Amino acid sequence: MEPVSPPLPGPMTTTSRDPGDGAADLTLLHEAAKLLGQSATPELAITGTLRLMSQMLGLNRGRVLLPGPDDQAVLQIRYSYGLTPEEGKRGHYRADEGITGRVMRTGQLAVIQNIEEEPDYLFRAVDRTTLPEGVVAYIAVPIMDGSMPLGVLACHRLRMRPRPIQADLVILQILSTIIAQILRINSLIDERTRLLKDENQELKETLQKSQTNHGILGESPAIRDALRQVMRVADTSVSVLLTGESGTGKERFSHLLHLNGARRDQPFLAINCAAIPEQLLESELFGHERGAFTGATATKQGKIEMAHGGTLFLDEIGDLNLELQSKLLRVLESQVIQHVGGVKDIPVDVRIITATHQNLQEAVNQGRFRLDLFYRLNVFPIHLPPLREREGDTRLLARHFLLGANREYARYTRFGQGVMERLESYHWPGNIRQLENVVKRAVLVAQQGEIRIEDIETILHQESAVSGHPEANRAVPATARHSPSPSSAPAQGSGHPQPNGPSRPYQWVREDEAAMLQEALKRTGGNKTQAAAVLGMTPRQFRYRLDKLGLHDD
Image 1 (cartoon, rainbow, N blue to C red):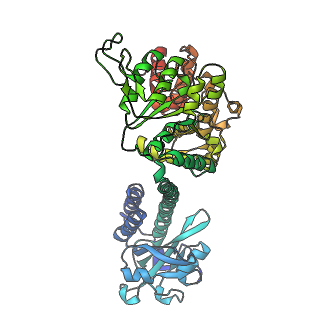
Image 2 (tube, one colour):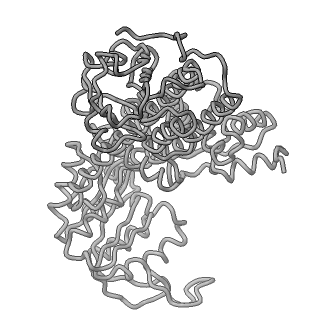
Image 3 (cartoon, rainbow, N blue to C red):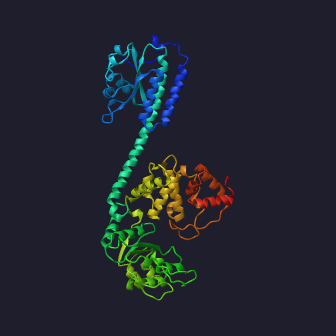
């Protein structure tokens, strides 16, 4: 029997309506829409909709049939109301079987006025003896995704009822559209969840492989070679000089050397020679006696003495002045120190690991670094590769930083199409540290839970402008051009290198910055933290400019 389209003859097309029918229809649709927005699972939303059909309209034993997970050619009852579990299990149909299979195959609704007179009605799920006495009709409506059937919504109905079947058909078609939305949303969630699970599993497997590497992520040959060199000398007392660009993880590698050596249970201390003023660095390293200088109200141990028995990591050793180089050489040769203002030799047992992004050999040639100290430190040099030479690691690290940023900012953000490929193609002058900062900023500016390629292009364009790299001239997509120009964005800092990136020259607050700040606020819905991230500023710098320009709304 071919699908029957309304209007239908006989009692099924009665024109008299119960006065409450319209109100019941609207109430049902309202409640079904609420289920769509409030239910945590498709099971609750769809089963709740089928329950409303039965209780409010008398459309009984409603069921939603979908292709089976193992065999897409077989429709199975996935959700139902009024069917027993055994009946639900029996309800499966191929495309060439029964009314349900035909609706799925053709995408056309079917109305069976009397199931006992229809040879294609199979009575497979529900026996006739289970159904009520009288003429029972069967209605099956396709659940459509555009022009493609996703499944079938079907139910039983007593034929002889005052309510016209035309009204039921309209409601069922609307409900099939709502159910299609539920299925689509669930499919998108499942897809995103699957992608996140795959990414998490990949990270978990990498972390398991890297347990002995204490958090150093990477599978590239370059990073594996560096790790192999670390393991060769970790359990020795040999001096190690870590070289590489800023942000390549030199402190993390020094900690790895310590944790895999005999001193692992003793102190590990780190100090950045470039981050402490020269007049204070000597006291930090060697300690001082009471009264050695103004403000020295008590004797204080230095980092070398505090690291006794363990390891001291000296980062940016190339910035150490010549006087302190001489004192450090004495520590390496004699294993003794003297406090500032003191005369007593204090024996120490400490392994010193150093690091620099400079060319120390060139510094020696220019007279800025002692040759004898260079040879003492450079017994076993290990070069840490820049991120652009670590093939495949950018993707892994980006996912790791994304998970961390989502936890830190309580977000649920993922990378959009093309973002990973763009991150892998960037030159990363700031290496791993810069990648982490870019991912965090992208999470803050992302909308609707997705980091778009346009967001990344804008951020990378700003990063390139700050570093002076030629990629700053790379064309920014049209969708990202409305962002404030990086060259006009206020720069942070005071002309000195920043801990997390290149130096940014100081600029006065200018009147013409007002429009740029307001545009950033508009883009981020008034969120000052996100607006600051868009412009490459800290929130404090952003608020300072708002204050100076009188742009606060409070």
